[in-house]
Image 1 (tube, rainbow over the protein chains, first blue to last red):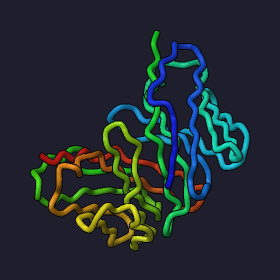
Image 2 (image 1 turned 180 degrees about the horizontal axis):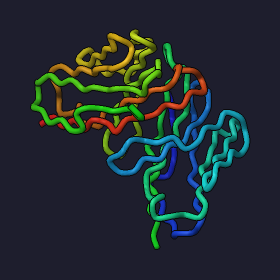
Image 3 (image 1 turned 90 degrees about the horizontal axis):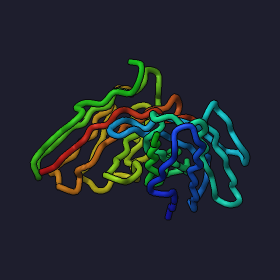
Length: 112
Length: 115
């Protein structure tokens, strides 16, 4: 089966840095995606990692270690609008597609 | 359109009824996916279309669920004899080709409530 774990909730202060961890055990691996989802809205793409290492994109960075089955999303200079759920998703090869298998999401609350 | 659109945004129905949920993908995207998201959970894969054909329907929970994409653009997810357990947000996503590195872009979802 597929197993993707991430913390349920996190709280951080405006202007600070927060790291959201994700561990995975999946049958197959074609890359790892991070999505942001505000309450009642669609998930929006943040980052994609397929090779080990750090990918930086503005205030957001994502890290992958395939040997450890581990990724993290790093958010710098937190803003109130960053309050949202962050979904870790692994791309696996399905019966005829590259499906995304999602974790349950980490609800991040940014406080003043 | 600029993004993936889904209609209706909300659907309330009674147990046993039939419902149709519509998805309009990003123009030019050949790959289309349906996911279901229950409260407090991540989205779960249901079905994948490449063009007009359902290339992977391994996530459909049972034969009450069916989806079509007759012209390779708009897709409709159909649920027969709805049950209370079907209540969830149904998300549609599209990607350019369905390739291994393709980003999936999600629509706002249809919130289905079965009473």
